[in-house]
Length: 166
Image 1 (tube, rainbow, N blue to C red):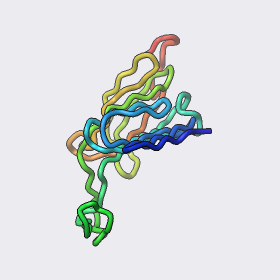
Image 2: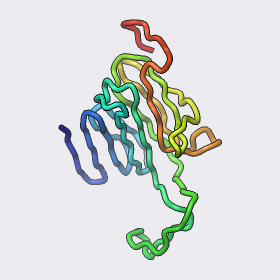
Image 3: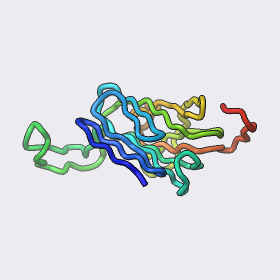
Image 4: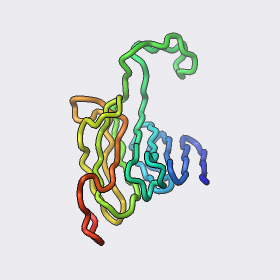
């Protein structure tokens, strides 16, 4: 079950366990995921890590990719269609932010910025209203590290009061 939408400078995927968008600028929605990127092209997706649909998942991986390339990568043409050199590590990510809103339903949530090895690096400020979790994905991270991956955890060590959202 799912849908794919392809338009000019827009691509969306919407399935129960993964939803995502690629867009050149502005905002877009794919199912429960709404993304606003301003004027920086980005790919943003959310995938359930526990096999449950996004609305009931206890762990969700969210990616926010901008222009990601190897150091020293070079092209033979201005449109970047013919590569001359693969370059090498470290990877370089174009700094940008994206406003993320994800309809997650009830529960208490925490958002963590992840290192490239998947370990949690920092807690990301988030807000929740009407069953929608919102936060800013920022490639620059906390200034100490760059990030493009986030873990969203439901009821992360907190007890929720029945009928009350935070």
